[in-house]
Amino acid sequence: MNVLVFADPTAASLHIVDEVSKIVRERPEVVLGLATGGTPTDVYRELVRRQQAGDIDLSGVTTFNLDEYVGLSPEHPQSFASFMRHHLFDHVGLSVDRTHLPPGRCDDFSAAARDYEADIARHGGIDWQLLGIGDNGHIAFNEPGSPAGSRTRIVQLTAETIEANSRFFDDPRDVPRRAITMGIGTILEAKRIRLLAFGAQKAAAVAAAIQGPVGDDCPASFLRRHPDVTFVLDRAAAGRLQREVGANPES
Ligand code: F6R
Image (tube, rainbow, N blue to C red):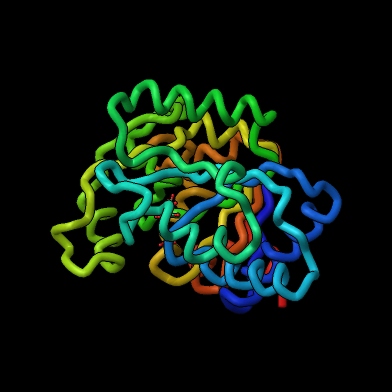
């Protein structure tokens, strides 16, 4: 795996945006896997800026998001569907049929999860996947204890994740307790994976993922089984890495 360390979140986000821009220029119909949360918002802002400046054209890409809260409709302001429309989709000429998120509401979540996997497969798989990481090492909503081979499914969120995500809700009691998420096995099938992490709060999870044992205590550690993974970090998130085994500091 590769580890890139940048001076700050802006430089790290620009690295990601440059890579996406290059991929989309080479292959306008690329299939992108996308994440929500605080970490990727600068990436989406810059993609929107480049789209509006005519530097890139995202209108031909297909997107699959990692996860959605169970119980929230796509119109709910705190749903990940709303997040994506607000931060990216509404500003880059992406038609709704090119964007995909697992449903937060439906009659049969098992069928919906199977359909989501089938939809990804029908598009030829995910070419490039963006991830964040939870303070507890989760990727998507695969919390500690999630098996390496897990697929899209309903999961229970940990108290730690509910607490971390309560910052997006007016009332912390409104944070959903369950989510529908791509599995670790689903994520590992993406052709390229880029994990973005910022801040000292992520340093322990990042160090566990890169230098700890590979196992379900830190779901992100399973990424080391993938042939094309890059961790893109700011200095604070890289703070606990031992230089000799890891990071190539940049800028
Ligand atoms: C979001 C997701 C989560 C977040 C993670 C970090 O779609 O799947 O795994 O990437 O919880 O969240 P932030 O970026 O808010 O620190």
